[in-house]
Length: 457
Image 1 (cartoon, rainbow, N blue to C red):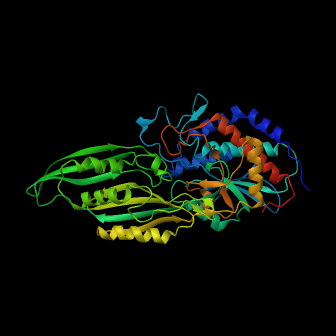
Image 2 (image 1 turned 30 degrees about the vertical axis):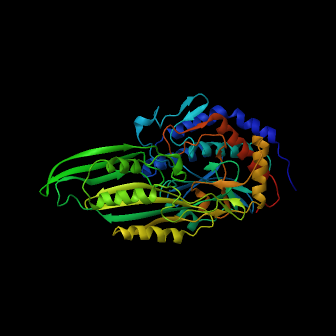
Image 3 (image 1 turned 60 degrees about the vertical axis):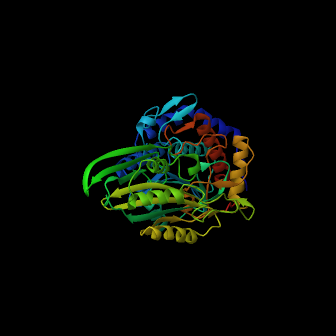
């Protein structure tokens, strides 16, 4: 038996909740839950769990406090909504036009760190669940919003949850784009480590320090180099040089300007004496400046797999550190479905060894492919078309989301094709219209699944 869904009523309910949604998002953004600050991230998780309890949902804390779950409904099938409450650092505060942890409403936009990734979508999902609950109709399935706290870093939260708990049958993570993204690139971090000597036999200036980037999945917008003058083997003085680029999410590094490469260009004109650190910087610029990896031999000749768009491999050095006589370089790689990560690793191992260094695989998450023929994806497509009035198509998610954490999960929302993507950037924002439309789409999709006795596996 299929229970009819009053789509217009659901959409109206979400519209009527606009001010409440913004108010709750304001309180959420106020908590600077940067991934590395476990105390503040827990505060952010507690905030949203408290909101959910006030709305009448069941809540639970899993994985030693690292994952929160908001649930409603009963039944043999479970719809999963995978989200995260942690955020990336704001970066250079002077580049923000406003306080990143104060929600600012301006010209139909809601500014603040996390408004887009992932706090705004969490609020949209929570109110979508409430809209379905308030229908007062029997729920034939269960929905769980599973909220992690370390999505922007090592994912130890979701890994623990997956080991210890039953998993949903299917679902989505509102951490990407519309329409349905049933394909997602793989994600890999490679750590290259080299010895870096200081000074040399000749008198002159040497590159003795290099720092760039803050986290592994952001293209660095700042790079600092330390230059030291040596005479007769003795340190005379030192100075610093700054390079400024544009930070973007490393899933699309072509949209930004990597400050490391800008620094390499600056220092090429600085008449420096050769040493290992300068050699490493020059080689990185030579081999990694092309985001599609042609000099590394990892360029994807085709952007399609089985007729579906998967894009190409992209790479970006994101964090560089020098400590004493070592330099470490994190390279973030997003590889297209159908490419073998071991082939990419081999290329980078050769690069490291050519400079007398070593390579370590820091993280590796496989690419995602979920057949567009799955019944639950048909429902998502229908909900998108009914609630947003747009034509659905199945597409690629460029970034790395919790869709990789569990089978049968796709990336879905919150960005529409015409929206500006400010994820991980300064002045991050989501428009009010996008926030509300997300709530409508998710409410219609959940209603179509939860109010029906039909299986959507």
